[in-house]
Image (cartoon, rainbow, N blue to C red):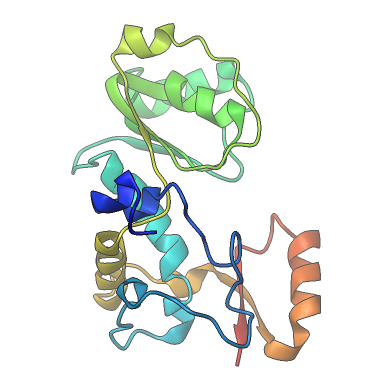
Length: 212
């Protein structure tokens, strides 16, 4: 909005009156759309198939930057197919990978109570935990663990201009191949089929794109 406390401090991703395209306002399937010029970015010659994935890639870039991940850190990301089916299994995994030390950084990218609790459980003392996933349910949480481990907890929402710049540089320089995330491509006239496939094959289709 440009006027709230977050926007005035340059944190537009935390705008209290946020209007995300396709959520609070019309999305890009409209014939016409408006966008503040300051929120448009030069594609720098990147393949359009990858440019279409820059925005979701920025979400993870922002989360990682929030945790100040550095070389040598042990990082655990809870995403689809998370390993915390039980506390015992997660304990065994932490023991195996970190020799029982715990992870320096844990990232919650699901939005489920179990994965949030898993992030706290798997983090090392003075570890950093980042919550990216959008939760729909509350977690029954004993916050003594935060005090006992002296954990640093970070919320992560959307992305900033700096995240877009960093993400595009990673792609342009060849460090990341976003095309690997494209599971299926559909002609523009097959939108109904595409959304039906996404709904019925949620666990198999990572990203689907339209050709225009």
